[in-house]
Image (cartoon, rainbow over all chains, first blue to last red; front, side, top):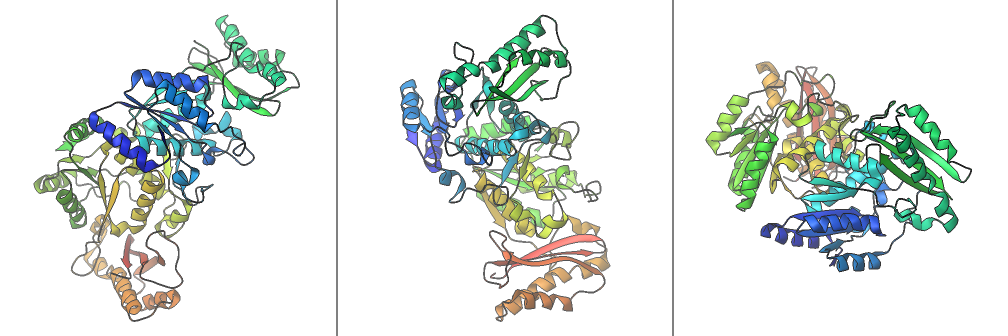
Length: 285
Length: 285
C-alpha cells in the first residue's frame, strides 16, 4: 500500500501497535535494487509488519550533488515491494516532510547533528552536512513510524555507524539491524548510482572491490601495517579512477587505525567516469 | 517511586502502555517550587500516569554558569511528588544519561540543534549552546519516557517555543502543554534560582515584573511602538540592576517586532545581586 502522508502512516501504525505487532522500517531513497531487497527480505522475515520509506531526502544532498538527477522509480519500487509482501511504502513529498520551502540550513529547521569525531572523515569530509541531513531525516522517520527494528545496509558503513551512535546517544527505542553488502557477480557493490555508469565505466568500477579484497588477502597473510596495506592499492589505479579516500578505521567508533586488526573496516571512495562510488570491507570477514 | 535507571523507567512505561494508560512527563531540574507544582498538577489532572524527571542537565550549562552550585533537593522533591500522587520521579545520574565522561561538546555526542533563528537572540545570545543542551536532553527524555503529553512552563518562554519547534520539525509523537507563569504575591516569577537572592535582592528583583506590567499597561492604552515601550523601562532601573535584554518578539516564532501586537511576547533578562533572572509577558493576556 502506497502512503504519502504522515498522518495516514501514523493512523495505520497506531492500529498495528494496538494489535501488538512488531514493526520494521527500511529507510530508502528509492531506486530499489537487490541490495535494498535484501534489507526488505530480512525485515519481512523478522517483523509482523514492514514499512519501506521511499524518499529522496533533499537535506542530505550537498551543493553540487545529484539531487535533481537522482534516480526516481517509485512505480517500480511500489510494485517490487508489494509483490514481496511489504505492508506500506511511505513516499512523502518534500513538502510533507519539511513544509513548503525545504530549509537548506539549520537557520529555520531543528537538526540532529552527529558527533564531529564521526563525521570529520571518510564521506563526511567531502560531503559537508550530509550526515546532519541523514540523521535528521532518519530521526523524523523513526518518530513517524516508531519501528521496533530498522534495517540499514553495510554498504553505507559510515552512515550505519553514525545511525547506531545517534540511537544510543538519544536513547531512541529502536534496534538497528545491519545487513551485508550485496554485490554483482563481478564484485561491484550494488548502488542506485550504478545506473549512471556506462558499460566501460562498470568494468573500471571493479577497482574498488578489487583493492579491498586484495587488502584483506594481504592482511590475512600477516600484513597489518596500514601504510603498507594502502600501498597495495596503487597497482589497481589508473587514470580512469579518481581516488577520494582509502582509510582504515575501527568498525564501531571510526577511530583511525595505524595497525589493522580484526575489527578494522577499510573504506574506499573513488570516482569512475564522474560517478562517485563507495565500498568497504571488514578485515575479519 | 524514585527511579534512577533508564531501563527501569522503560520497563514501567512498557507496562503502562500495554494497559493503554495516557502518560504525562514533566521535565525538571529539580529544586521544585510552586511553579513546577502547577505543571505537575496539570499533568496529574489530565494523564493516567505522571513521570517527573529531576535531572540537573550538565550539557545545558555554559562555561562559567552555576552547574556545581545549582540547588539540588532530591529528597524534598521526591516527598513533594509522592504526596501529590506522581507515579515516577526519574532522577538519573549524569553517567546514566551521558556515560562515564559527560561530553561537553558535539565532538563525541549526537546533539539536537534548534534553528539558529530561534537561538541567536534573547537567552541564546549570552548562553551559547544552552538550547542545544536543552533540546538534546528533552529529546532523550521523550525517547525514554515516550509520553503522550509533556508539560513546560511559560517562564522559560524561549525554551518552550524552541521545544515546540523541535517537536514539529522532528515529528515527535508528543503533545506539548504550556503552563502559565506562577508568581509570588509581590509579582516575582518563581524560579529555582530565587534561592540565591538575599531579602534585599528579592525586592530589587521585582523590577522585572514591574517593567513588564508597565509595558503591558502602556500597550493596552494604545502605545504599540516598541522603541517607545522599551523606554518606559528606564524609570524602573537603578544601579542594582544589570539589564541583559528587553525584547519584543512574536510569541510563536520569535520574530522580532518593531510594532507590538496581541501576539507579541515581551522578554526580559536582568541580573540582580549577581543572580541572572528572566521573566516575560504576553501583551494580550
